Image 1 (cartoon, rainbow, N blue to C red):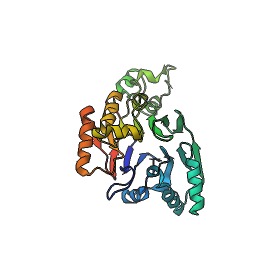
Image 2 (image 1 turned 120 degrees about the vertical axis):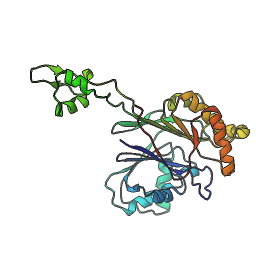
Image 3 (image 1 turned 90 degrees about the vertical axis):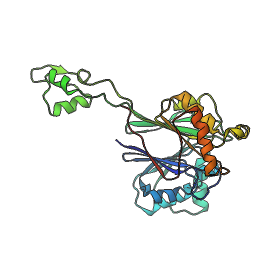
Image 4 (image 1 turned 90 degrees about the horizontal axis):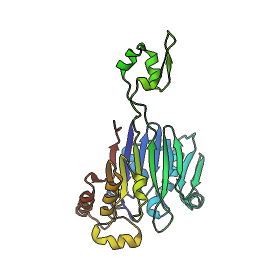
Length: 308
């Protein structure tokens, strides 16, 4: 099962040429999950030829403008096609007010159901087919949330030699065992899946954290993520500014990634003050703490393989 991440925008505060505002899309089979929706998100959808009408859920970190100003366009865009399923939007308090007032004031035509879930707690926000999305209250200047998608463990590896030794004939019964169900042999014996399967294998985990000061709970929340998309808004020389505005430096993001044992860490939500040359300094500071750090780029496509 493929798990793909599309970086739709990487900027913070204001869009720049070639740098839209923060937004990331996760695609897992038939589910499309959008994390934040900064200005220009629908342009990135068009350029990547993504099927916006199939968005399952939109997860908003907080209601600062650079994380939600793309929502009106995306909601309007979804009315241009037939949509039978509701669109679920998750976020902290006031996200419902923002959506309802925007739709009313701008008189945006909507021909499908929008269901908004407001919360501000460390909870399981959504449960899908074989995965869940959890939230974490982070430390910003207004209520803000981090998100983590975690897949359920997969069945262990099937060992054909063990099945043959147990007397299970090749064919449908092998598939039954691989689904985790016992099989009964013609002679009356029963073979349990554990006899022919290895131990369960982990699913994948993806975390999205932006607009927060560093604090201890971040590490266990993102621990073990195959991919962490994390704010790295400032270089270390602006650590005091970052702390005052409750943002992360790239160096702090690297430390979090290292302590959490993530697979890879992609920086996002760059300050508009940073040119392309400056961004190289950001990633250099992150890599000094965590080697597998990289800069996310607008329109970047990342694949998340299974850990075998």
